[in-house]
Length: 62
Image (cartoon, rainbow, N blue to C red; front, side, top):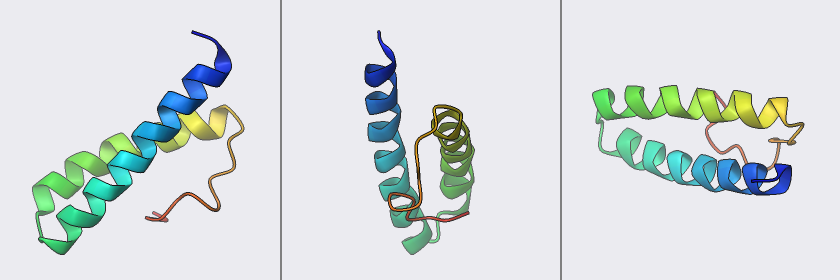
């Protein structure tokens, strides 16, 4: 897998996790939200290390 594929996969996962986090927050599913937040932080760190600018795509902003 090349760098572009890694970035695309991570960005796709990041988008999905954010959607699930927003739903969990709306439903007040605190345990689910906390678990998703761990994955969100991991993906955010990965994307930052790959020099991806998250300013426009980060909807959660935590």
